[in-house]
Structure formats: C-alpha cells, structure tokens
Image (cartoon, rainbow over all chains, first blue to last red; front, side, top):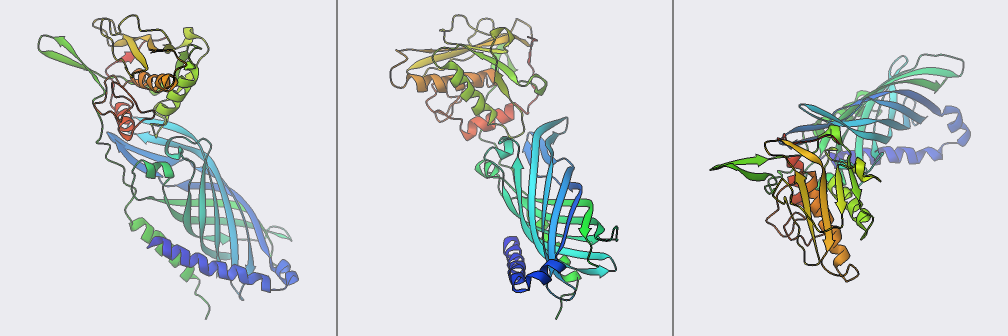
Length: 208
Length: 224
C-alpha cells in the first residue's frame, strides 16, 4: 500500500515540475526561489535484530546540508526540489556493548509543493528517494548501500536578513522503510520504518 | 480549486502513519546452527563445555601467514569470509608481517604437536590437503596461550589440480577454528564440515559464528 501511494504523489509532483518550462524563462528566473541550509538530522533505528540478545543499529545525529529551489505554479503555491546530504557514524547497541560500525552518508531528493501557512511561515510536503552510502561495504551494507522511497513534510520560517537574502529556519520530518540487499540475502523479511527529523538554518533568496 | 495548505502535509503524515503501521523488519531465526563448542571430559562422568571468541577489545586479530603455497592470499580470503559472516563488527582480523606479533600463526608444515595440551583441536582432511589448529590450554587454566597455530599442507604436489583450491578452503576452515568454532559441522555443505569441500561459508556457518560471538565465552586469550 505504501509504495503505490508514494508513486502517485511523486507522479503528481513530477507533472507539476515538467510543466514549469512552459513559463517564460525570464519570469521563471525572477521568481526562482533557492536556498542553502546547514543543521542536524536525528533518525530512529535502522534495524532491530536478535542474536541471543537484542541488537539495535542506529545512525548518530548527522550534520546536514540542504539545498533547494522552487518556482511558483499558482498564486500562492510553488513546486520545489530539495536535496539533503547527511554524514555521520552509525553503531550497533546490545545491552552491554556499543560498537562503532563506521561512517554512513545519506542523500535524499524530494520533489514537493510549498505553500503559505501564516506570514513568514511556509509549509512544504513531498516525496522522493533516499540513498544510503556506507563508507565501507561491510556488515548490513556488505552488498552496498540501498535506495528507498521517502515521504517528507516540514515548515520554513523566513524572516528578512539582508536586502537580497532571508534567514531560513526549517524543520523537516520524513519517513522511509529501510532494508539492504545483504539483509534480504540473509532472510530478513520486511523493512524497518525509519523516521527522521531535521532542524536546519541557512539563507534563502529574498522574494521582495 | 486550490489545495488547502494542510492537505499535502496530511498526505505525508498519512503515508508515514501507513508506513509505520506496517510490520517492522523481522530477523531470521538463525536456528540452523551446529554445536561449535568443545565438549571435553573433566573427570569421571563429567564434561566441560569450552566456549571462546575474540573479544572486541582484541580486534583486529593479528594473523601471520608463511609466504609459501600462496598462504597469505588464502589467509586473506579466509579473513574476508569470516569477517563477512558478521553484521555488527563482531570479528575482524589483519595479516601482520612478523610472526612475533601474531595472535594466530599459519604455516604450511604438517602439524607436529597436538593442541589443548594433548588433544588436536581440529583437523580438516579434504582429499588433496590437510590442516590442523593447535591451541595450548594449560591444565586447569581458562586462558588459551597465544599464538594459536594453524597448519595447512598439501598431500600431493601443490601444482596438481585441486590442491590450491583445497589449501584455500582448508585455510578458511582452520581459521574458523581459530576464531572460536571449535567443533565440526555434521553437514557437508558447511565449510566447518570435518572434510570440507565447499569454498564458501554457508548460512549455517554464518549463523553458528554469529551465535558463538554473542554468547559469553568461558575461555580467554593470553596477552601476546
């Protein structure tokens, strides 16, 4: 049920984005909104296993870089694309032991809609893909990283900072289901729901 | 008609809620394992079950391989195979250039003496080659005296077909003993079968190794 819903949302967003080139380039440029932010992402566990005792695998809080752009598609709504990169360690935990498993990077691309909430606060929602890149192919990533569907939403607060730039404070929530080729090869069944929450701060092009 | 601002957010939350309501990932049972511990007689009518694995504080295990019969490559392959058996960094090993600094020494000699102060712990016996792993455990002690010695040797001319493959899989088998799988599998599809013929670890080998590394050991390894 999950994948068809995500696919239908992505399809709708894609149609919106593909319609954008129909607008005049100069108009599009003047209305183009773009931004860059830095912050931190927290994620729930990637995996719970059971070998005599319970073992939980989790990403550490991850420094985050977010880049995005959007174009108006209606009087108050925009279609946007946002790419997010995170990099942190990940570890496994047992009742009496915690093991560092190396570095894990993620890259996510979300296509979505942006609209106003109140004054300088906007909402944002969309769907896309997340890719896991382990620094080393080992353990649960022995057969490499994995790519998963992702759905996310959030709010942006954009007070003016300079004549051409706004401050941008963003809170994001996203969700995906995690597994890897190695886990599937080892007869793990299903996938683990992973929720992520990020808080980022950056600059956005002013729309005044 | 314009979408209400809440609609897309509610849609995402609904997708998230729907995704969360799905069952989480389910781990395999890992019930297909063989007895890996060494069960010894400790007196009239009594036995002792000896269980060992390398603690994380001793990783990576240092392994020295004699530069003969392509043993360094076979050892590297064996390390990789056993390392890949684990999901959570339970085991790791590296080759070292000096046997004086090694926890495990792999040579091409025919095994000369028996381990466990009188009992050869294990010996692989594929047709083209043979192997053995010797541990020294002083009487009454719970501490294995390092180094652990692995012997791998061809029965025929090493250039004959099949001998190199035999040396490779026997090395992996013997390293299995050196990491703590003291007993043989009763299944010939496992690398830890007494006369191994497969070149890679089976799911049962992996599950057994995982279980061995999550059970508290009653043997330790001496300092080196």
